[in-house]
Length: 251
Ligand code: 13P
Image (tube, rainbow, N blue to C red; front, side, top):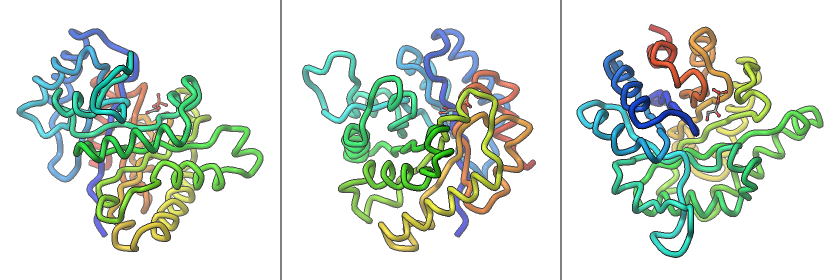
């Protein structure tokens, strides 16, 4: 199965509207190879400006988060209906910063994910273990709980749209990348788990991204591994030069 690679930039809580617009413009000008997908998740305030820049490009607009209700009294939340309206086609769900800083549970993550699917947003479900969990040999247990918990109620007919992002918490923003062997081992484990949860041919279509200190100098090796179908990039997505290089991996 040839899965189409996805290079995703998560700008987190960075950039003014003008800075985001300029960065999006520079990334689009760098050229997008026809054999891969690229996605940008700007802060909400810059979404309209970035959407305009991306309109005539193949780059997808994404949100960094998504609520589960269509509308209502949910101060500070954002609805999947609003995200679609703003031009998003994808949504990052359950990022470790949401889980660990803002206390999001697997149940919240599941509600957000099914809400996104209901409105035609492709969810990027983020899962990952902390350093203590890895050192206590709990990595696979933690990932299985997060994967199964996040996907409760997601039918086989919808599962092929999913994107999973493995982001070990200890590798995010730390400059420590998981080794290619560690990443491939986890991705293969996740693929096998997805095969048990859905049919084999569906599991083989689900893209599994790696995130955690992906940089121009490690992307080629990571992307050469069998079950690594893309990258979810934080810090290195904030500079045009480094993100353009990451987009052009293995070229
Ligand atoms: P860094 O690339 O800065 O480690 O961030 C990864 C990440 O959290 C992307 O969602």
